[in-house]
Image 1 (tube, one colour):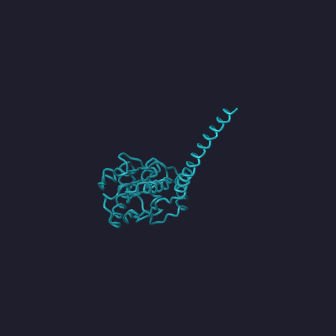
Image 2 (cartoon, helix red, strand yellow):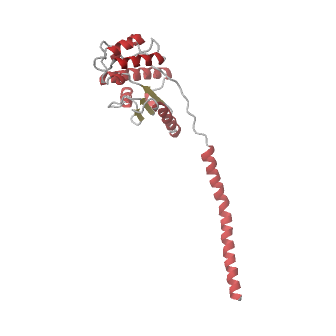
Image 3 (cartoon, helix red, strand yellow):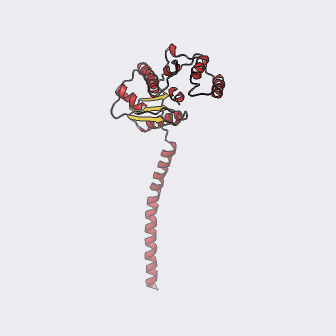
Length: 223
């Protein structure tokens, strides 16, 4: 009986010792967990600001009125569009909100129009390089300061990519993060902005970014 009592006392002492150790460990552990929760849920992400923006403006010779556009489309009637399609295009154009000072691509304004892959590439270069030249001049940012490049084009997809064309022309640094988003429609613009924001928030030593949005009209008419 005495032996059983001593064993019970030893067991109770062991349990108490273990409990004391748990009591000593649990508060710091809870504190660490609480700090992590506060850090994850209440940490403010780095703020991203728009420094400047540039929009390419073509020369006046590329202005295309509604009447001129429809005449150009009618020149396709034998090989591309029937009369029903032309009537639908005319109704759509009237409700689109486009005015008579809207610009069109050079290949589409030729007589007859000559949309092709090379024309679409030239249109893309004209718009991208024109906007970037203006932006560089306004911000005084040097090309070697640019760490991220995001290019978005809803349909036109070419090799080499549009982002490669920009990087090669402006001699961006070798380790630039280059993203070329194509073929995802107009909604890809929001994805490009979200991608740019996340990249700038996650890469601390990068403070310059170009986001280029472009839509090639030639690729919509060369069917």
